[in-house]
View 1 (cartoon, rainbow, N blue to C red):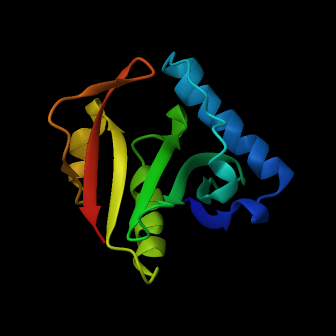
View 2: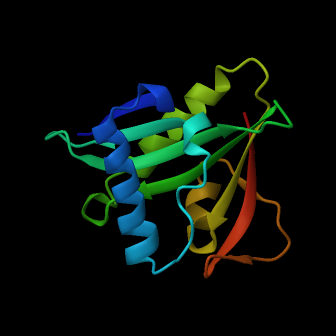
Length: 150
C-alpha cells in the first residue's frame, strides 16, 4: 500500500527534495543511461506528487507544471517509479493524483506530456492521445508528445 502526497516546492523538506532528486537520477540517468540536466530550474515552480511505501521510503514521483504562457495547459513530467515497486499500480496512482489536482484548477483545460515512446500504451490507458507525428530524441530516448483533456 502506498501513500501519496501532493506538495509545492516550498512545502518539500530538504530530505524529500534530496530523495526526489536521487530517485530521478537513479532512474533517468543511471538506469536509463540518459545524460540530461534533471535540475532544470522548474522544480521550484512545480507541484510534486510523491508516493511512499509503508516504511516511508519514496518509491515514485511526478512533477506538475502550469504552462506560464497558456494558463489552460498543465504539464506532467519526471514520472518515475523505482524498479522494485513497478507493476504495482504506483504510476497510475501518481498520475490519478496529478489529474485530480489539475482538474480542480479553474483555468485547466488540457494536460501535455512528453512520454517515452515505449510507455505510449500506458499513457493511452490514462486517456492521453499522441499528437506528435514522429517520435523524437530526448536525451537519447525516443519520446512522443501526448495530450489529455482535463
